[in-house]
Image (tube, rainbow, N blue to C red; front, side):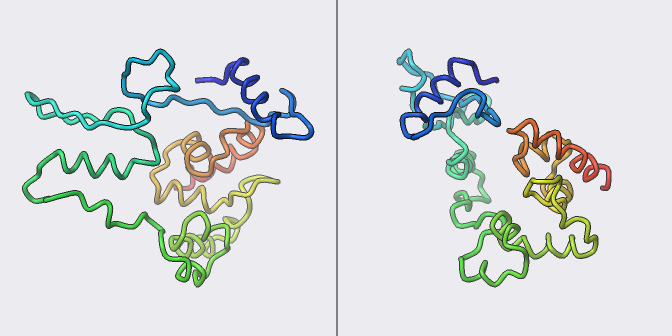
Length: 197
């Protein structure tokens, strides 16, 4: 999907209601468009449709389908999907009691021996990322001049987060894909991270 001129004008109009100096088309550094899966409804306007999800089980095939929903409720969707499976060895999903990877209380995170950028992004995982960079000091350099992500974040994305492509690294791991200029600057580092593994 792409941002249409009408969508861009709408966003600028809304934003400019709150700004003393209005922004225009030339001020936009990057654009992002996406699709949101919505449950069918009776409304003509998709803005009026529910953002909720549904877990649908086909009684004949046993296939379970997750429809609708949003990224922020993925754990709830996973829990309800596992609960719908009725697996004898699992009474209910355990997802609500499992911390996210890297998650820790603030007092624990404040004691992590790693650069704050890594701690903010990776939590307690930052220690192992910093150790990886200690073995190869060039990994603590930014992916390109003027950009914050470090080369070690790209390496970590390949080795521990399953990134397989430059697009995967830049768009979904370090979020540099939105601004075309940043993406172009970071592509050599991303390609090198993939090639090094």
